[in-house]
Length: 104
Length: 198
Image (tube, rainbow over all chains, first blue to last red):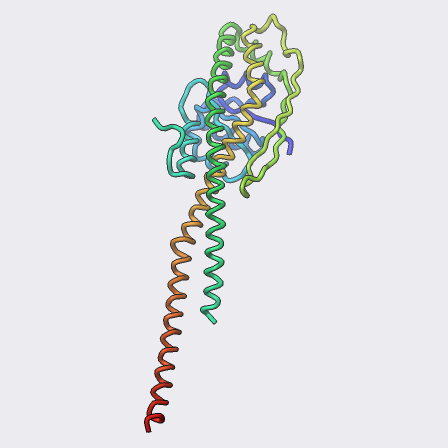
């Protein structure tokens, strides 16, 4: 299956992806991010979502976990939220019951 | 009759339990491998991407946004993701390969855009394969974690519910049958003994 990649995020962070050949979908708030992501996920197998919008859309992201595609990857965009790590940690704890990576 | 059937079921359950347990062990092993790679890659990508975006922000400060918008509206590279699936322990995980055809020239006049922007565009292009790999692994980790959880539940159901129940029923039937047999023997002895003594 051939497919393009898309990136969803705030305008200033995704322009650079556009130049690199990824289709960019600028969003400005949580609501538009939700709608855009839903629409984009239907057409693109790979979607990068900037992390600042990932957290409020957690429920939507979870729904993508049942199938191999679409792949939605929260990417860090400088304004760190630690969402990616938290997501990783959650799946680790679900599977193993213990934390083997981020012991602090 | 029923005893025979139950015994067959018990042996199937035990065998299934062993198989599932092995599967679970192997999945956990693979999962930890993927998890470590995921973590490493994420840290790497996070650093690189932050650097690229910072540089781009700097570039943005020097160029008016509408110029930038115009310059970047034509993509410099054509990227296609070739998406397949791969089976890891019976779980379909995505397998993405990137076909990146970068045109040598950046699609805008150098007078319009600062060199920081060039650099950041190049950095992001170079980052794309890593990002895709990360996407692939992260998805695999998540899919596997669900599968491991499900599998664990099955193993536990077999180990703590199915198998003990079957064993108990079998024991009950066997006890009953033994009891019947003993009763029959005693009855026979009783029937025979007066005849012998007289």
